[in-house]
Image: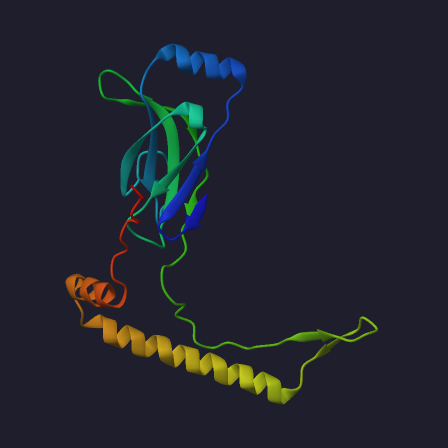
Length: 175
C-alpha cells in the first residue's frame, strides 16, 4: 500500500495452521519488491527487484523507496539455503504517486454552498474568479521555484537548506 511517493506499507496475516508450517521451516523471511512499471507482470519479467529481510512476528513492514511514480508488486517468501527464493504470497500491484507538482495547469474551480434550507447553489462568479487568480499565482510560484532549482546540484541544495534550517542539537540533560 503506498504511503507517499517514497514509502510503501506491506502487511500480512496467516491462518494459525499456515503460520506453524512457515515457522517450522526456520528460514529467513524476505519481502521481495519488484518494479513492474508499465508492464504486465508475470512473476519473472520485472524491471528490477530488491529484498528486504522481515520478521513475521511484526506482520507489517515499511519499505523505503528511491524513486516515485512507479508500480510495485511484492512477494513474501523464504530464502532457501541454495540462495533461491520461494514465494509464499504475492501482493497486488500498487502505484506510488508523483513526487512533485501536477503537470496539468488547467483547473476549473467550483464551490457548492448550502443554504439554510439545505439546497445547494453555486458561488458567485466574482469569488470563482478570485479562486482562479489564486491558482494562477500558486502555479507561477511553483514554476519560479522549479526554474531556480534546475541549475543547482544536490550539494548546493543541501547547503541552502542547512543555511535556512540549521541542524537541531540534542537537548542537554541536567546533570
